[in-house]
Length: 342
Image (tube, rainbow, N blue to C red; front, side, top):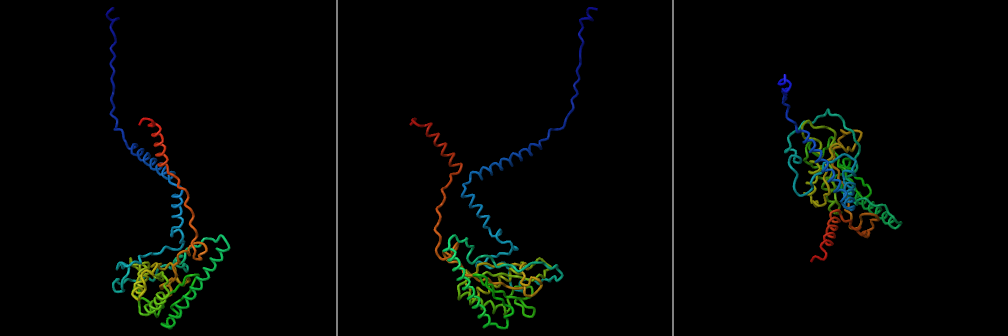
């Protein structure tokens, strides 16, 4: 009995081990991406806050005056007007481009008569602040109007002498200080090969007469190419055709004696700016537009335009950035801590 009372109970513990799957680490990748994005965001905010005020104003001014924001019309195909010729895929003779079928069943696009190729003649005038500035601005605009009218008359006289039978295919108008010459196609008298960019003799005679006036007057010219609404069935489009015809006109005018520097811009507008807005398939919509203008003289930009440039405003004091301020504070602390040690 005594041995039984002093005998201890033996307890056996059995631990069941259950193997679990490996702990995934995908959350770490997501967390690292979040931390990286937050670091980039705060770094950007710090850089923006440390930029000088005049630098912010310059950046804002750049985006406010960018041409794409100032031109609400349809986008154009701007091309290089330098001495290097365009690639043969875009511009060439009618024989260089393979024959393409014209799709006559496309949907008629909508659009209105476009404006001219921007305010290249004199830029935008600031609002006059004094009566003298207002009088000077009015005088300058009147002179520009008179010069444009005289230039329009010269072009009309030159065209009447050279090709009176083509008077119905040429329209000469002026708007303030710019003159626009519209050289339009005709069903029985085309200016280009059908679907091509090669100039026919009638178009060459018109461009030669206009080139002589441009050389004599020393004005600049912007060349625009336009097409009708008939579509191509292949990859070649009206954008290619309008740009190619505009470049072909430029090359011919330069060959006729025009100074290459007198060409300010060569643009293809496809069928987005029809001459006859009510009928986008009218032959008159297939045309070349020449915009003639006089380049602004030194001191004519801005308010007044009377020839005297406005006095330059003094530059605002420069605001030191965060890095410069921090460097200055560190140097000051270092100078105080080392004072008297040397």
